[in-house]
Image (cartoon, rainbow, N blue to C red; front, side, top):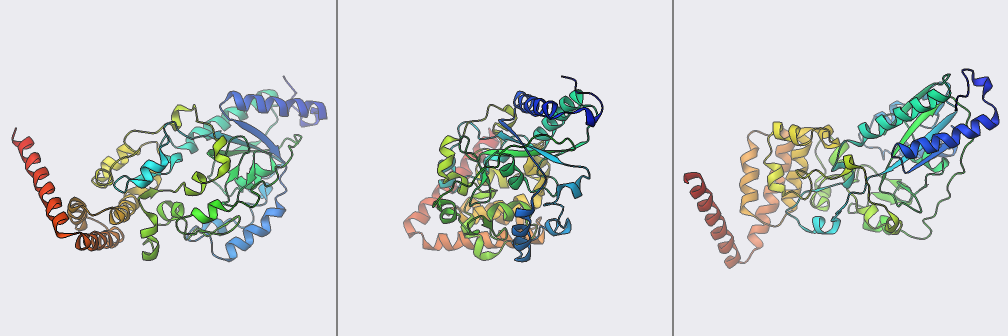
Amino acid sequence: MLLGNAMSQLSPQNLLELAKSIKEWGKALGFQQVGICDVDLSLHEKHLETWLAKGFHGEMKYMQEHGKKRSRPAELLPGTVRIISVRMDYLPPDASFAKELKNKQIGYISRYALGRDYHKVMRARLKKLAVKIQEACSEFNYRPFVDSAPVLEHAIAEKAGIGWTGKHSLTINSEGGSWFFLGELFIDIPLPVDQAVEENCGQCTACLTICPTQAIVAPYTVDARKCISYLTIEHDGIIPVELRPLMGNRIYGCDDCQLICPWNRYAKITDENDFHPRQQLKAQKLLDLFNWDESQFLQNTEGSPIRRIGFQKWQRNIAIALGNADFDIDIIEALNSRLESSSDIVSEHIHWAIQQQSAKQTKLPADTQVIRLKERLIRSIEKGLKRDA
């Protein structure tokens, strides 16, 4: 379908046909849903300003630095009149959430981060979608976004008919839950828009109740400064002492608010191989992850969103999880072995973890402590025998 080189040649019927084709091309590229909306986000602008004024963005200074560009897309990309919103499911097969969260010796990583970096996957698909549009309408300006610029992606998804914004601030789809990524393509073609989705959480407050740190301070409002996803990914410095025990074994992100959401009974398992878990990341022992050196960290997280946080934050997060784990003399030994080579920030959390482990040791019955020491001695002897063999 060639619509011509001049925007003026695009009749209402042409635009309707183009919108229909865009949705077909998007699904062929692997997006589960494609929607279109205008650029009027004024209803969401006030909420954003209130959220920022209360400091709920924490250290994410870029949230303020971009001013109102988030709620005014045409200021971000002049000429923008429509936004194409897409979603792509990422729930991996064998998503054993409860099992991994209950095992305090295992490092829990948010499900979205177990595979390839979604930014790269979705951006590449959005660019391919843009090429398809350009083939049909050569006079066309666009820019793709995947959680990488001042874009109100959830508000846009809501207006484009992808889903509604839940009380945990994530987008929920009535037929697909919330286990999906969002992406946007800003365009200057006045396509017909889709109908916005109405909120459908009802009286449910499960996500507010289950949040480990009570970061969802009110329906639709998250205080990032308490959110485990923010603390383990965005926050660069020392994590408040009072929040550390609440983090459990979550070393990168947190899925609790999605796990409890009743709409996720409709979530679909992704068939996107790029989002399937990497074995070196899924359900790995905390001690094994903590024992990686920086080169191993870079190697094992190549092409993963986890690499973005850097080795220091990785060690900091795991140190906290080790402090929250059941007592193990091997944990204390591993923590002590890293003190000398760690940065001040990591050392702060290692010291805390050692204190937590030591406190648990003193609470163990004397006979249990003897048994643990004997087990450690046996493991040490076995390692020595293997080296000598």
